[in-house]
Length: 132
Ligand SMILES: [Zn+2]
Image 1 (cartoon, helix red, strand yellow):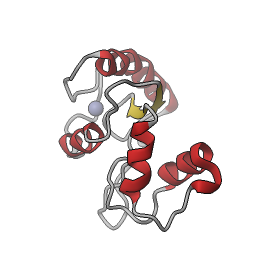
Image 2 (cartoon, protein in one colour; image 1 turned 180 degrees about the vertical axis):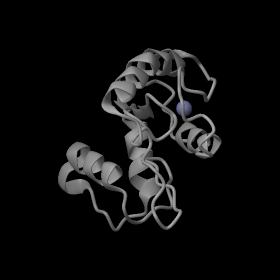
Image 3 (spheres, protein in one colour; image 1 turned 90 degrees about the vertical axis):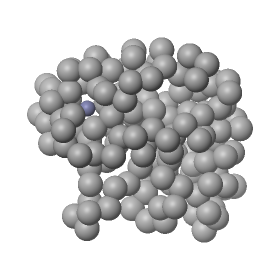
Image 4 (cartoon, rainbow, N blue to C red; image 1 turned 60 degrees about the vertical axis):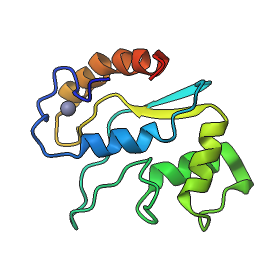
């Protein structure tokens, strides 16, 4: 799959898209039962750190991961467990999360963000249906 977003003005932002792709791919279920489509990965933090749902070494500022896992696994979720434990369970249940846009879109206005979401959501769906 191409790691470029269709019509994206942020392609040269330096966002580590190959890294996010590899991180997500490790947890891609063989057969996807439920696909969650997020808007885009989060912007880089002020301290220079990149956050991402599938970065499994993150231990803080990881709200999407925590809230998703709490919602899905309920009381079984324990934020003290290493992240790979619940990412693996997420995978084993056939859940997968992709971003419509591959670059953080938070600097764009709502009109451009909306267009990027629409233009790229179908593309990521077709990627998840392909065997690899
Ligand atoms: Zn992009």
